[in-house]
Length: 504
Image 1 (cartoon, helix red, strand yellow):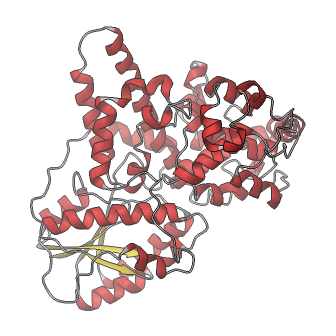
Image 2: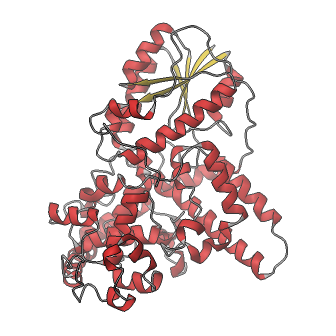
Image 3: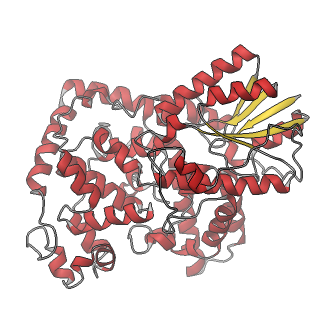
């Protein structure tokens, strides 16, 4: 029996169920990856994502070749490329991991399913997390009581993967410049040395470093943008790309827990940090499940009561926000950091979205794609869930309007982060920077809005819906379908708010 392994968001050899199933069930396996213009040209896809995917694929190709497996890498429409492949290699099975992506990838998968049915190809989709195809939050919880993939044993590394030997099947990954030339969008784009490296080898090195050293400061260290780069796990991009399996993380997490002995201060700190980290892994899949059960979330609010909430969607405000030129130092430093590194800790991500929606009166839909483009770890399910949550339009989470000044005083009191990313503020003191929205600082952008008055206006609009009969009715309906146990019980302590549970 002949098989094709369709590589998508599982750029790894270790603990890869597609490989293990195919090796066990088929006589030969052809690894196949398609660079798809329809996805690459989407507005939520940036050069950051192209670079991360290219690095991950390049690393995977080297690992495959070491195991005498030679991939087929193509550029084009995936249905067209599958047809072309089937014409020279009539395979029986198509293996892939279940992907919960944007609406375009969802529709693409439906077309692939139709193609497989027409050709008589058995498409075997395998989950690589605790997200279940088509299930809502409640059904997911029930399914997890029967089987939790994350707790299962790891799959051993295949020493050899039998590949077809006929000519015309193999094609290596494109060189970076050649790949960029294939699209007008990325023509001439250079590799960025500022982005986190994304391949399987880097993924395991990052995990090991976190569990051996950096993770000690995770609890308490991920709130500040100054410390989050070191104390955060930095695994989000690897989970997004599948260069590391979630099951591997849980396995190594368990080993680390067993290794911690005694009850001294260091041990207590490690235990607290590991609990916090695991909690965020659980929340990660919870939010992705929302998109799985509501694929059109990029166009519609989970809660229909807020679908027509009025926004200005001022393009000039959007450009100032993206460029880090709003006149609010903590906002601008965060956006400039994102633009350069592709990473920002969760608290600052929440702050910039809150500022855009409540202060600038930009819709979560309006900022969705440009903001996704500067997150190297862009995961549609998390991104869209968080946008709607921070915009206050799901109806059941606490409405948080983050104060940039308070975030500065709490998490960057010495202005280290702000001065790093806004050099024009280098000559000013922390006190002067903290008062920037109220005091004009020469050489730096003046505040583009009166944040307090505009935030009040947006909150009033939201609370008018929230307190109305239709708002209450739709919120109860939405909560029963998409809410977590925490949302539904409302009995746990404030610090367990899911809005604070998603930083990696």
